[in-house]
Image (cartoon, rainbow, N blue to C red; front, side, top):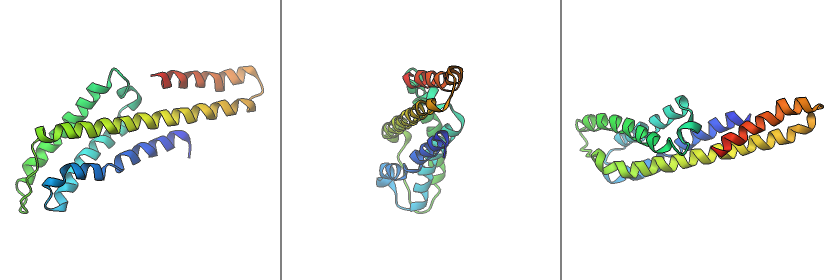
Length: 162
């Protein structure tokens, strides 16, 4: 598996592994297991969509990160509000908290996930950097080394600094 595909797999795994953390957050309110699956899916679906359609390196850079977290929370809030309307019609007596009660713990959860995503990017960038460095010896001319190795390494360094 190449480094970029491995990064994508690791990013997806970071979302899949959130089930228990999300369930713990809502545990005091769960009477029936099926509605709790909806709360987990609301959050995970939004994060997976972000992985699929956003440039995470840009979105999690220092200047954009807070605004990005707020965007994620807004979209989760909208889906959660719809969930609250629907859950009131379930016969097993589920009473989930209002958005104001879950916003802070959810913000912390998403922020921790963002930290994990940044760590995964860093790990894979370092791996790519090592791969390029090790490949230098296979190129016979300085021009090939410059175009095929040195230039990509410089791009990686710039990405890594951001």
